Length: 229
Length: 296
Image (tube, rainbow over the protein chains, first blue to last red):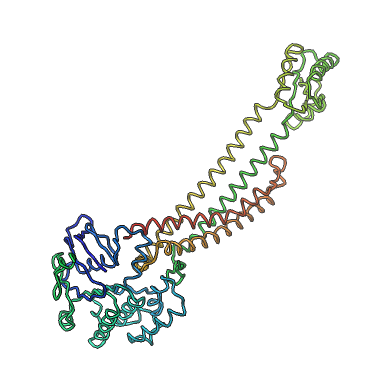
């Protein structure tokens, strides 16, 4: 599903943010990504959702070497990845409904089909009453739920989320985690970056711990071992 | 591949985009005037060239002794030589009264003074190559009447035609310059649009939008603005042309006869707005694709 081989990342001529990372995520696996601020979590996520090219090494997604793909092929690969950004990145001029429908529309899904999917999902995350609301009128927690709905609406093969429960109360947080686990049970590979160690312990899923640009797997085989499998 | 909708990437509200139709209108206006100017110059050159082609003139300088009988015999001698040239269609001797009438606007009544030494002008029309016929006339008269001068008008007409064609080239160069300015303007507006909408474009890119989908939105927008501006500019040029024709037409008709717009000019003018729209569309597409190529 996801294979990193000696992947290094540096921005411009700066220092290495990520140093020779090698790991392999099985299809349908669930991993938390934890580490102190500035450790490289967001940079690793960027590499996962093809928002950044590595400075060195090789990344394979869905069995395909990303560096060898053309731009259109890479775009098609991105459609199989759902991303929850830490800053939500909702489109201000679009309604909640249109924000969530955006990935489906990009993929060419018909309006009739996508309407049902979007409304169901927004209802599930508790935003059924805000379909036509502008994102700026929503609270931080509500915006986060819209961002999550947008990331999962296309039933992605890989879900990458950066602090997806950071702005919501415990009840909504648990509901959203339930959604991620549901996706995971249906075969989606989930990588979820968080600072919430209590939640990580409670759910007992494997943890990718990153510190000073290096990665360590907890609660599973080591990243290097997985890479060799 | 689904196209991005206007709602997905709302370019219409951009301040820079609001000016684009006006800028393109101005450029199409200039381009239309340049086209019309080039065509007017081409027609004028053709008219001058056509009017004098197949003609040459023999000039007999005034004799030292103004004896009418002697002058008559000089004219007869010239006519005899000219009639010996094959292909001569018409010979017209400009008599003294006609020559005086030509000079009258400059000399006034003095032009009619019988003491005024006036050359005798003999106009010749030839059915074929007037240049060659003039050369033959020059050779024949060199022996028979060495003081006679043969002028096939090529000297001054050539210079005038060169000037006209130079101005025509200048008008076409202006057209190219206007096209280049339109390209630069569209590049600027497109880049501004890309900068303004960068967060949304990045998001669409990360969601799997193909470069062509994003570029398609910009190029459709540029095409619409280009076409609107082009039509506006063409309409303004049409009004300007009519006004100019009305204001100065009759007084300059002798020097610059009114333009007769042929099908080539009309088609070129009609295609100007479409050309402007296509230039805007293509420029926007290339600009967006090159910018997106820098994204991972």
